[in-house]
Image (cartoon, rainbow, N blue to C red; front, side, top):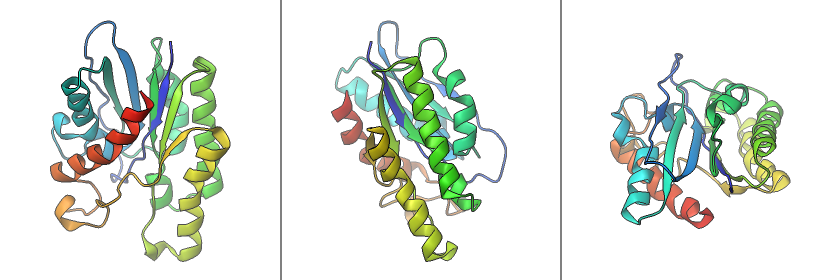
Length: 211
């Protein structure tokens, strides 16, 4: 059975661990695991408003035999994702892995080199479980106030990993959402319900093309 890994980035949540949401669409369906942070977890929103749940609705509407599992944990980093990827995959594993992590790395000023190493490690662990797993890495970008050198170095990590590890790439998970007051909650970090819809619309074409 093919495995598709899609890695999603998390944003800063101010600490704490979010709730792992598993959306099961029935027996016999293939599995899409979204490994992410508070953006994926849907911080501040109802579970059904987070983009993984919205992607599930799109799957169901088109009659695609996939279940979407939301493995978003608020405050998580790529190091946290590396520690929990085996647990998140579980015995069933996944057909698709979306890696949406790294946002918290950047907001904490962590080394881009370490973020890169952690992402490569997540990919390696996923493929160790299934060599045919498909992987999508969702990139993240930092605000300009962190300095141009760091911002560019951080941004370059995701396409670099995608190229070296031969995975699919979504250049920026928050394209059109990050920095837009109308699409974010009062903290200006976490997408609101409309922002989550925009993320789902951005992810969907890329994800659908991998199925």
